[in-house]
Image (tube, rainbow, N blue to C red; front, side, top):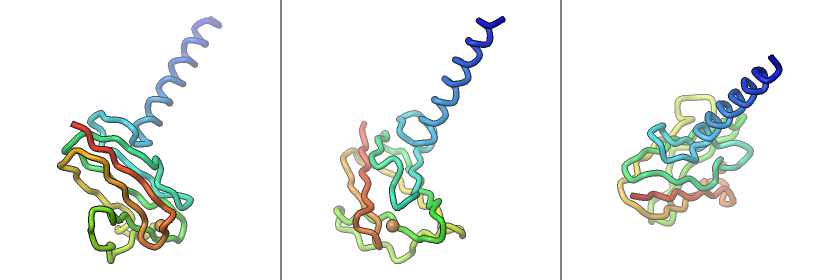
Length: 119
Ligand SMILES: [Cu+2]
């Protein structure tokens, strides 16, 4: 009976670990990669996806807007901020080319992240 309980616990922790890996978006499986914005950070800060996948960013900050700006690609700073409490809280972008794409938050230059797109 004790042994069965041990197995159950191992199974549960394994399951939880797998889910948290997917939730952090740091995987290259078919689930949509997700980057959370919280505590003035992009979490995870670096993410690797397959070419053709989309990344979804979600602002889960309390009362603070942010943006996702691929400044290094020569793009203009997004005029629309991501506010946590309305529909603008999420932003999705598809990556059609392989490469390394650094980005930042417009209003907060220290908030940076990197997208790695692989074939
Ligand atoms: Cu920000």
